[in-house]
Image (tube, rainbow, N blue to C red; front, side):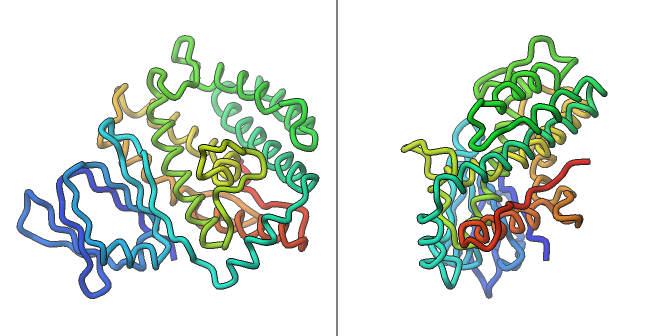
Length: 298
């Protein structure tokens, strides 16, 4: 079943009633309910939202990712379950025992697929000029020792928004950087949720190792999925004449978990595909496979 993504941008009281998320908006008298088991991600984007502890407990029990936003309406925090897999200890040990050569091979596969997916997005924008991206993808070595990812990224961001003069990808940069930031934060929550459900530590990355980053593995695994967010943002830029992260644009970005993707020869919602990816990652850690499954853009 496809899990729902819920966004709350107005003052509200959120509580649990008969296994249902009960929503009471401050501005309305009516109460709406949603089955907790149907929810995959919740985004809280208002400082006047109150959530009961009973509801938080039930959301965590059902492996729902709860994302909170700051005063600038950008995702800033995330609540995840500490335990969502019955053999979590065993899987932690397999993850911790993963050899350095295996981690480098997995990172190679990750960057190769990321660049290939970027190439497809870029081809839809500028045409055959993106062929060099496919060449670079094939040239990525174990661990991306020659940092092909950076070379491809420089070319990609220079050309992916041709109608925006001198666009540069910066976290605090001009629009549509804010759209990308918001979309990546939603994607990160989806990936972290899937990793926890698979019984893996989202903190322990195969490449990212920032001591201050609690989601290094999520940041690793989301790389080949980023182009799906980029593609959606390209559509948003065409559809909306706005440089602000409006409510309408946020609603479009909340479609990310249900975007249609192709993985392992099958079509599925992005949220389901991420679970396929994290399950294949564990098989690599358990020495049952040497290949991690990622989506392929067409």
